[in-house]
Figure 1: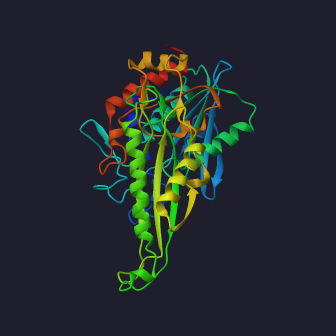
Figure 2: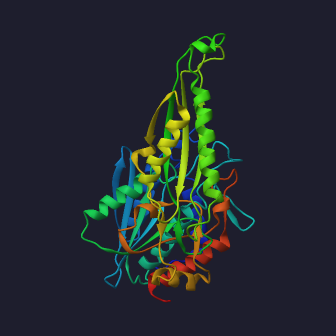
Length: 389
């Protein structure tokens, strides 16, 4: 391949705009503006681009028509590192303007996924393009991983990659999970579990409520009880540097008509877990709280997506975290949000969450990333992956 004519920064910005233009809204958050969404088009584009610059790419159909993509680029050492970039984005129904335009203005790239997390895809694919051109040499073998279903659905793609690696002969030395961290290596964040609660009542005419059993009233008691549990968490002395867990009710749906006592009400509650907490124990304890609050009504309680996650935490003095911090001239941090790192605890010797841009710009009506942040993250990746620092 001939030497690249245009500078990497220009190519990186253009590629990010192209990737933003590929609709990859998580199907669970799709709507009228996005259409059905899905990650296939982006996975196929990453695979095509990777193959064109010397990678060996494959699609892994984690869910029907929703593939992960894995692209392998050989390095000179025997080390293997994976960089996981989730392909899906959140929905766009609340966004201003064209969510997929990828426009460049005011030193920023705009559009859904620009910061969360297509920026890292653009950085890595441009860097690997320069490797193919002979401008750079990789030290470790790099496995570029594009995962589905991070934004909603139980980290499906991360679990798929975990299964893929379990069947592989490779042992990963390190995994970097791409998220907007302002180029600070994140060494810990909370885990979590979701509770899908259905309160069962009995329908009756609203003029004679005593003949029925109001499921919404039962749900109100449950919500109040869960709010008390959250308050107790906030008032307790923090058990870790990450603070205590949190508990939030974020969805409620019930009622059939204004003149019918509701026979059913659905509530969703999310519990974030701090290091040292066992999510299975928490689920059982909260289930008991819900049942007591619902009495005399019956409830059905299910674990959302059939999975829960303990918190992710690594020693901030680990070699990978310290190296990335030194290159980026930043300090290791803890985060409030979750990521695919929750699934990768035993998959590699080192694990960190890292990427350009701020989480404050993610999921917004106007999403953007500063071009300076792209440049900064690119410097970190080039130094780390080539062994230059």
